[in-house]
Image (cartoon, rainbow, N blue to C red; front, side):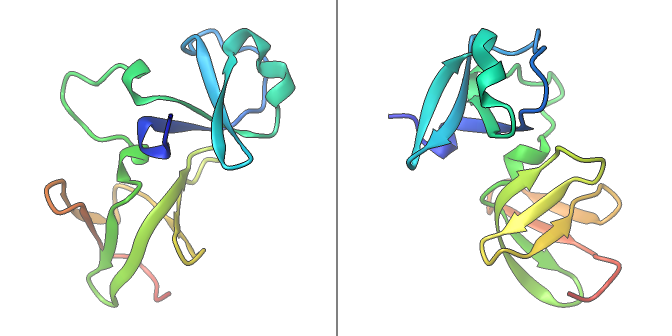
Amino acid sequence: MITKEDLISIGVLKRTHYKDLPQFVFVKRDGLFVPFRSENISELMGEEGYVLRSDIQVEEDGLLTWQDLVGYTIIDEETGTLGLIAHVDESTINTLATLEDGRMLPLHEDFITEIDEDTRILRVNLPFAL
């Protein structure tokens, strides 16, 4: 069975012309991730789409993607632990992290002070109090 850890979000599906997608795109239906052929994507408009992590080519430089931060704990230098990242939305110009409690935070390179992949901690210095 495919789990969320096996997948990476590609955002809300908004157009029917996806030439660079792998063969299958997954959407969540009744709590399960259901595969659909990429050529049939028009019936999925407005839903969040996922692809298998194994279908994504890893960058040669080994850099993380925003989606790789799902499951990381965010710690702000001023206010302390903010929570666990449950979702990352890259569908708009501003990338947002949604925490498990529903709060949304902007993700931007300028705010990140450290990424610890071993402990899965993202340290940030946000320019405002939450």
